[in-house]
Amino acid sequence: MPRTSPDWPRSGRLDLAIVTETYPPEINGVANTMRHLTEGLTTRGHRVQLVRPRQRADRVKPEPGPIRVTLVPGLPIPGYRGLRFGLPVYWRLRRLWHRARPDLAYIATQGPLGHAALSAARALGVPTVTGFHTQFHQYSHHYGLGILTHQIAETLRHFHNRSDATLVPTAELKTELSDAGFQNVHVFGRGVDVARFSPAWRDAELRRSWGCEEGTLAVLYVGRIAAEKNLDLAREAFETIRADHPDARFVLVGDGPALGPMQREFPDFVFAGPRVGKELSAHYASGDLFLFPSLTETFGNVVTEAMASGLPVIAFDYAAAHTHIASWKNGVSLPVGDRAAFLAASREATRDLERLRRMGRAARKTAEGISWDRVLGGVEERLFKVIHRQHRAEACHATVATTPE
Image (cartoon, rainbow, N blue to C red; front, side, top):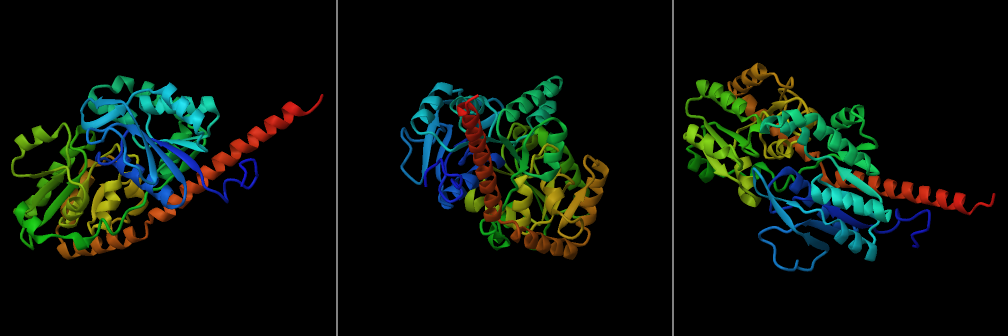
């Protein structure tokens, strides 16, 4: 069907460019979401070009496959071991998209590569959608940059308002950003892979390596080991749990700048390091309770991954926890920032282990209703709408330009 048809592209395939400064095997929530988005849109029949920084494990030339990969130069991100940001290759992207113009560019990150991609797409008249995946302005408080919080927020707003739409993971965040002056904000929810994350991955031998027998309580945290994750509260919560369960073990899965100091200060904790694939699945499923005290999430994929693995989650009532946790039914959500309530709930949740198991089973049932296919269908519909809106605007402009006075 010709692209001038008013019915295109709803009845055809899209040529999409997805630009992200992080992608698996890098380990973080944004990388995981981008993998699901890229692979999911490809499975739905669209042609996808993935633009990302070159990683250490990459070969000189990407292997051929259903996803066309364009690698750009990058540099390490200070304080984020193993992650890189892409350089601002504006002219390279402009030449690339001039030769093969995508129908739309989805730009997931707001680093130098993301800024260059947005400018190149706008210069060529390519519709753009940006993703709000990380609370950079909130992170600034934890790295001695609190004075720059307002400036960072202004920069983010300017960046996203240059695009045709911004996708966020929750209705709560949509309201927050809209009130702050962000325009054309829409919800792109998050799904969870209930085969990859499942109680079926529970591993007794792995638990024994942690020092846990069948009746021993294993308290889990998965994520970045860093100041912005509020891990001091998780540690305090575990100490309240250990008052009733002296043999309980605290297992932390992940890496980050606070890992070394925590290992030295708390040698009795289990630091499993970063885990992926089947190992990550087994670590989730082999726990009994998930503590997530972070206050800086845009969504928090680990919450739904833990729930899918059969773990009740204790978290503050926002982002994924607000969307999916029903307190004392499939986990516990608490007033945001209420440390005393978090500590009390952690101890109370583990006083009745049978109730804890019931909440875990209910968490799994909740997760089974969170489908990536449903989520991707909503994203696909939004991309169509953005493209159609631009086509209508271009057609209207062309009509005005050719109408005789």
